[in-house]
Image (cartoon, rainbow, N blue to C red; front, side, top):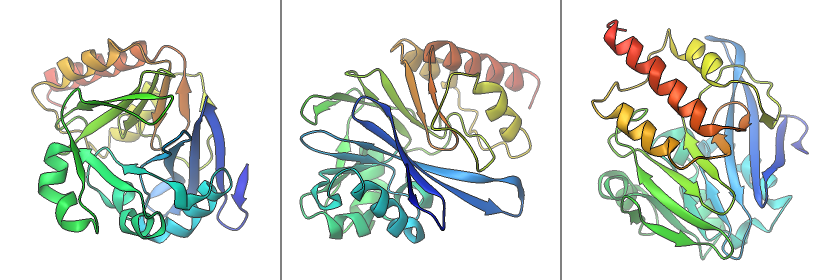
Length: 248
């Protein structure tokens, strides 16, 4: 569903109770443009994963409001502290009086509790919480793909892995959901930019995520992936390991 005709912002349900918000943008250095996604989990305590850029706040708020009153948000979190993930955090905290920010413990310590207008909830590795009918787990993934504070969120109820930047694809026009391979396109986009940290434990971290057997990868840039998420994660791990061995 298009929620802003001028900017092309859309919101679509990609898993039960989970909505992908996406805004296409033209970036001169990226042929074909780019897209920024946020994910809204509708439950007793609605959750927004990624606030979006500060300047995109009106577009994301408009999309959220097409499904629920944005003022009812209770949780606003992100994988790591970066403008496109947390730029509009304080705007949402001002809009939703009961909302609280969340991130990894490191993220809360190093960034969120200074920048956020309300205290942040720093989640420990493996910490679980409920929004009502959805059971969620925070998984600390330092430097995967980048950022000491990096983590991902797994919804045990729907098998959805909110995986942040792990499968970033270029281009501004993507369907809400794809069942096609996402590793190849994301690696093609990453190759000239090399924004992965190449940390020592990358393989072990990706295997831990694969062991969750996610059936939906809620990607931050491009389509959400529906299918064998474990296979995609293991394929990504293999490609990264080969690159490290070759010095790439």
